[in-house]
Length: 198
Image (cartoon, rainbow, N blue to C red; front, side, top):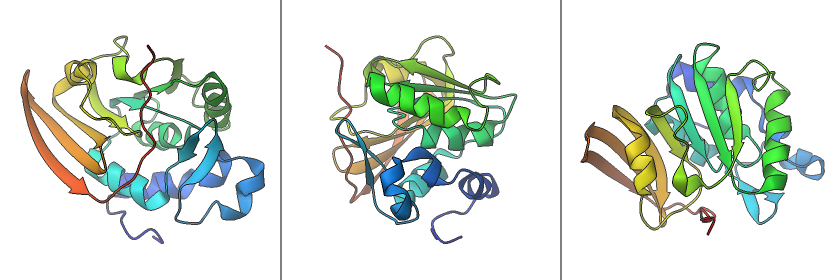
């Protein structure tokens, strides 16, 4: 695999099937395969493939799981997760920007995931998460926070995993008890901030 960071079959297959070209503005099509973050408008970016690969390998998404995708942007991570969880799973995608919410939803529906009910797109505050399908097996956050939002900690199932950028590090969190989180930190990344709706 050209990204070199992909190890698990489910994630490798998802990356093969969900080309990033489907989730970026048409004028950037020639850069779809470049290992760089690209602007998707409204002050947001689509993460570089290497970063997404690292986050997915930490997250270990599985078939049939219920996953919360915070800061879903143009829909690429939600579609990747939708491919992995399959028809018996559920991905809840949260995006704050109305324009990006619409753009992302349309991109995800290119694969039929919205109409099949595999991915549910929600416009809202990522800091608040989404209680509807909680507790979640996995939570992926694709924008930077200063502290892990309490709502997301609560909405993660015991035994579940969360991958979230805190400052310029990617944090891997595993919920071992109601208030017991195992944490690993991976430094050296850059993300746009997760904007809280006041």
